[in-house]
Amino acid sequence: MAARRPDGPPPPPVVQRLRIRYAKRGRLRFTSHRDVARAVERALGRGKVPVAFSAGFSPHPKVSWMGAAPTGVASEAEYVEIGLQRACDPAAVREALDAGLPRGLDVLEVVEAAPGEGGLAERLEASAWRIELPGLSEAAARAAVAAFVAAEQVVVERRTKGGMRDVDVRFAVLDMTVMGDAGDRLHPISPGTTGPYAIIEAVVQHTTPAVRPDDVLTALRQVAALELSEPHRATRLAQGRLTGRSGIVDPLEVDRSAATIPAAAGPPEDRRPQVPPSRDTEGVTRLPASAGRP
Image (cartoon, rainbow, N blue to C red; front, side, top):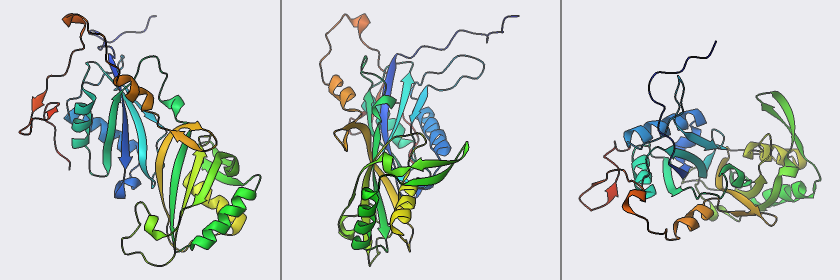
């Protein structure tokens, strides 16, 4: 017996793909990936962004997430791709989406996916992390990093969906350095923090299972008996393709560069349709009005 199909016409196809870089900051670092996904989907609805949907009895928006940062970790480089059923100005989508998200979930950039340049996920080979360690002296941090770098293997036990697994953190970490004193901190845990304050930056290649900042600290404890007296804060600074030993290439650079190449003019019927814009008092073109930040 053939499966019954939903009534009505199929949903419109995807005519444009947009790639979005967003940040997870402040207290929003404690938001789970599932809650972030819900917030983004609600913001797309509020901003009247014409997201395409899958077919079937339970249509889902065409939204693809790329390796979200763990709960409790901040990030300046999270990525998501959306498929649209009508073409839109990426700048207008960025403004509409950012307006519908709470502060701390900040849309940094939206670019159109360049055709024929491959998927976004395959460009995310490694992450650059900054780990801030209040209460730890720079000398202690340097000693721990030196012991870690000298080790051939540092295996830690991690709980995954499939149970406990051994993860070789040393294999995944391509580079690790200590970044000077507290004046170099990116987002201090407390503006009034005084005393020792070490900062470690590491380039970590993406593996399965993923090596997280907590795994890096566990590895440092193992090789150097590192003891932390205060909570740490981790921030993902970048994601992208590896270049050389530890350089990271911006994954949106290919799409951004393609957008700067002028397209050949075609007849009016071949030109890409745009979402009808509205203009505010300053003359900024945007998508139809959306709710402001909560």
